[in-house]
Length: 390
Image (cartoon, rainbow, N blue to C red; front, side, top):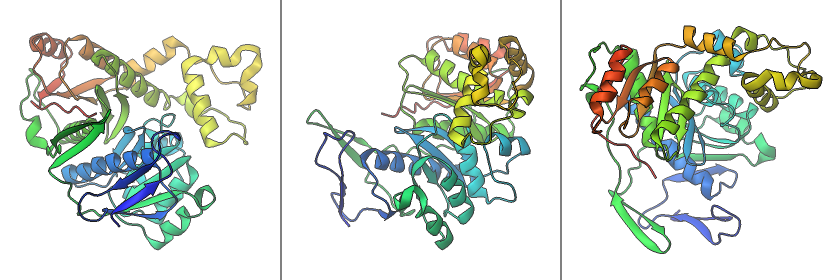
């Protein structure tokens, strides 16, 4: 198939719409549903991300995309008991690719609502069952088991979008797009992100363990497919905060850092013991947890908490939250798609437990940025490569 007609473009008034190949056949097949214009933008960007992650680490990888940027990305590592609880994961053994998606989705469950999922490996029944429980628009993978396909075809009254991609497909070396009737042309960004990019450690502390290297690769590859400006916090093989599309670098760092803080606060004992009403569904629980973490006082006013909980939760005050983050959130890795212009980015990163940083370098204030990192004993690598994506 050389082209595929779509219902409309980014908005219902943008017609006609299609995806097509100027030469050859489309490298994908729609197995179920009718994906739209934005669906395919998410699908193709997210597929590139998980394919690159698998190539760089050798581990299964998954991503959860919204509006052409990842809400989360993760490697297929086993879930801890706490992660199972905060991600609403099923009990029992789960395949590595299922764990990868659960962790990618769990990185920012609020932003992953209505996501597009991408899997580096064949979608199996474990993964399909997890997808079936979530509010999601579709999935892209190199293949599907018969059992997985059977499950996915029942989702959204049979309309769930399932796309299969040819894993051997290689894009043309030059890519083109049109803006306001004008054609833009550039070389396809085939930059390989690997451990060689992490060799230029510029801080006094040069102790970079393999786990941190993997987290740096995850951060950088995620940023390569995130709308710029972008900053990404990573811990234990999964993103925990992605700041995308901000005009200011420090706003990226704050946004992603705030998300990382929320991810960690979801693991606070008081959050884990929240006694929800039985009829509260997953998305509602995610929203309520976010409200509880942000400001329980508002929920408590007038007894509003009774709409969500069987018993009144403890008050997660700013002091309690600050203490939990400061004492327990450590060993975090941060990646930036362009250089830090000031040391304030490092100061904000430190507040969310960042110990390792990967960024291109090249600011006229690099010395100030390095000095700030040294103040906190961080390890910082200059990759020498910008990762803008638009």
